[in-house]
Image (cartoon, rainbow, N blue to C red; front, top):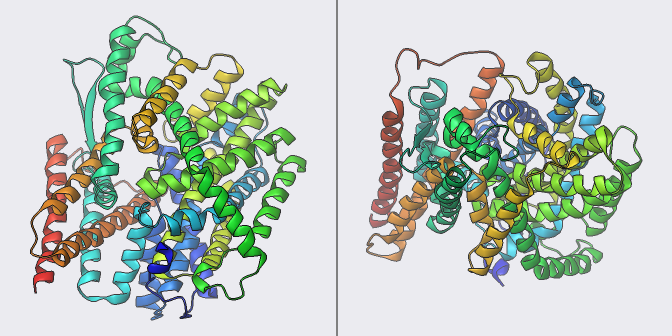
Length: 631
């Protein structure tokens, strides 16, 4: 079997420091830091920065170079704990601000910090627990199928730091170049990080690219196949669906829009059409894709559960260190206990039916999220799309069972918050366990580390949301909270009977058609849901990987070394952008302005030129790997 063939960096029979007091304290501090920074960033621009690789880089710097400790698994434990803060924050900020907005409208009371913390804690713990039974199926048995780009990149960064020499040099070249690039683009704003063009001759369509290092890095690591599926989804959305909406609906007011399509186009162009219509279609495609993926994975999931029950019933005696997980019995007891707690505890507005919804759809989206990040990485994991699908179903069920009005809306957002956090944490846990699988970490200890990171972050997230709401208010110009605004709109639409079901079912049947054609549904559905600009950046990274793979080489070793050098370099690129992304978020909180675009700006042409040079730099470092193989 494949898991018997694979040999991790640290052999299973070797024990090195891993779950230490030092790693727990440093990891907990990073969890709070990344959680706070990403909460602000997500509320400001609607997306967060993956923290696994930045946490690994910081950990390596502190542990290896300051405190002179040399355990790679201790480094890995720090990033495992630290990255949990970002994932929990991502799940919380996409939903919970809706409660504050309803409170401002007088529909409900302002949620207490206890309520926010408990909802976040329940979602975080459930996300970890629901991922544990899937580890063997997704991380081990599908090791050659699911790449987990950020998990792999994180392992490469840590191994390069451990080995030093040329490998470490390649990683840190990528980190440094991407960090400078990111600061010039999004800090100094010398050129826009998003190049955008509207095609006037083909009304409704547009094109652009996010010229960012992390996207090129993810595209290279994922490869051309997955990148092309995502780009195909964006092509359907931006060159088929949006032009058709503009052509046939020009003079119509289509809900959820409040003005005609022609007026939307005149007011905001392609972005108005995308935000008002395509996101609902994408959410429908994601939901259908998730269901299809779960049905197809069900036999393997069942086999995994059966095997897990048999194995965990025997205990961990005789089980290799690298195969030990938290007991399945503990997983089941904790999941049921949390469901009962959510139902009975008065501070959490979740009914008995709501608790059942959380368990059923929580496991569903934990499975979907864990598989999805294996394909495209955590940074591109459309957690908000899964949350929208959850809110649609949960709100319909609550409304049908008599939970209507303000209480029904609050209950729906509480359910959506828990499941959104489950999806985010399950994806993060999958990436971390993949890193651990490659390095030879102990899964059980990593799972304990994830639980610590979630607990620390849950305590902090309530205070962070209160602080940000007090400073600017959610829904304001400073904190637009775009994802939470959409969740609020979805729930109000369903409760008020004005949900654009035609758009949602359009996405559902597009996903069904893709499945009939034999193509992987989820990557295409993600491409429909996410802007073409993001997928274009990933696609270009995938094309660089294709170019590197198709070149002529003197030997297979020369080819592998060339590709591997590119993976090391792009891993560093992802890390560099992540670290500077966190830094810029801190600058924003401290009101430090580094924008010089008013003095000098290179415009879209400058952005494309810089991105072309960045892509060429990947080929340059691939060539260095090729030359090293020759020597």
